[in-house]
Length: 318
Image (cartoon, rainbow, N blue to C red; front, top):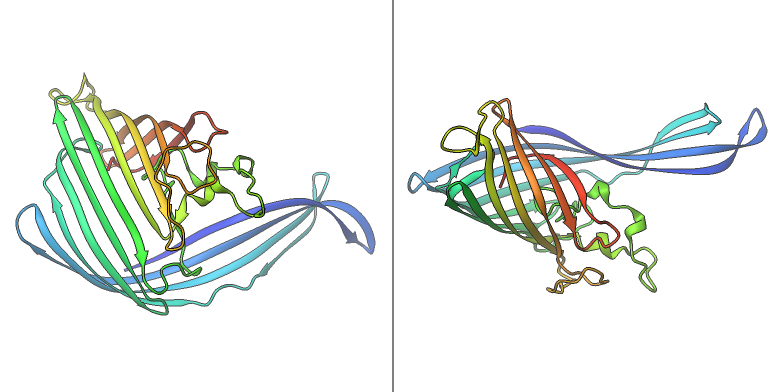
């Protein structure tokens, strides 16, 4: 059971003539559109174990999504706010969705301080959704860890997609392959309009961003992990108060829809929906015995206007 708000927004600023006491004056007008999705979710989960490392999971649940949109407007002259207003904007109708899922799960991995270091993990899941929208979600997630003391070579292949009648409904959020837990170096907040390549005949297109979103995505990750700080027997340096893992990584991913087919080739500058690739180094630090902080330094090859970027995420290693 959960009640989760998701808030997003964008801000614009422009010079505009406004009226104050009946007189026209020049002012800087700043407007922010804030969109909120309120998700209420309840579900029941059942598990049937085949062994200590393999199990079948089934669930049934209900989700209600409510949408809100607001416009905040401020007019500024010099350093003084001379006008301030806010109003509601038209928003999408609420959605009521019924969901069920069936998953086959396996896990015989051994976890280090910040990520798995040996074994394998997998999850194959299908989740039909019906109600106001009808579609099926498919998840294929396979991970393998090869341990050669003291390093681990980790591999992950993942596919997540929505299929069916309403799989690409505009009322659903698109899947984003540039999340830092998938392909590092393509964080949504880090990509600016100045990076967009102009497409003849389509002034609204931005290939550098458009190739990151869709109703389906696939990811391949390779990572070489080394326990830098840890305990005797698992750590280059004995520092149990601050377990730290460093890694070298290569991430690649692609997103697409039922109407767009990705071009599976490596190309840094392209108008096509080609895979995005990044490579770099990362450090994961265990804080307080429960929170894993990851800092990374990545080269995003399909962002040719960028050299190397830094990023941060709170998440254990996959």
